[in-house]
Image (cartoon, rainbow, N blue to C red; front, side):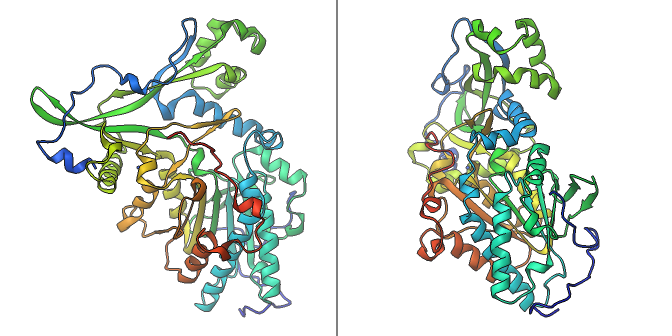
Length: 478
């Protein structure tokens, strides 16, 4: 088909996705030191590292959850539940930040990148009849709506039919959000192109229409996938690799950050819940979401304690990744760096690593994905033990982008996918990545231009307030 706009729209069908356009629906050294016998050695700690204790509990606090890895803490469970049950209220009451991705600036950048991709595919003779655009975790939907507005304008100004080819999947895991955008008529102006529904970031590509419940398999057919501030919603864990000497034998010991949760001010319990203390403790042992929902009102009384414990990790499913991350961290910082004096911290974004691998695996052969998150982009940032941040009843954690980058170096992912980043990465702790299977020089070039903060042209026509926004997680502890 010619790139010039035609009066009649193409009627080609997508093999596994929707057969026609949808009608409107409401719609991170010490590696060198570890190898040197003359290196400083420390005995493996028999007790938790007290320097790593955060705010010990008061005498009358009630233990709600005993020591577990950070990723398994009650915090993360309650956060997931809050997103599922009340995401619309969280945005409406501004209890979670969304200005960074809803201001319009990010939408314009992503529209320009998508337009460049269409041009590149057209020039190569491989522009699909139907271009599948997926947004994971659309939130308020404003980013996607504004992206479509900009893309429609770019297509009109260039007299191309790129916009006409779009089939858009606006997705989230929260029914409250999908209902909200439909009730607001957010996508009415793009009704012939947009379908609203559900898609799990852990299994991207499987779309469920929120109205008809029709399931659409988009795996291998996603031409563009956007995921803004989604990866930083996945749990993290913190580990430390140390050089130790036990009975004259040099070994490497691993420690992991464990967390326990307390309830403070038990005299206030009656103001938050009708549950007795015995009922509260019984519910805390349950694995059922309904039980956790009953504990949610006590969220503001919860207090966290974190310590590093020596724990055997030989059977950890991500042990190879942990070793790889520690080796890279030590090589990047140098054996005598002060941040490595007490061991090598590995801030492990295990959930984000899994999710981004799945997203990349679901791309079309010529497709691409863009993620943007709060991230740790330097070895120095990744070498400091830290945990997640709280936003109302939700939590989020910066993504270790060094791990993400390393996953796709030398095709360690085994997917044949490349990972691209801007020339100047991590400004205001914001990290963006583009993943692609095929070589997309034009698309990648526009992507780098749009997100390179050293290039002033990146910000032409962008509101100043949007381009100077502080980190989503302000004052990340270091």
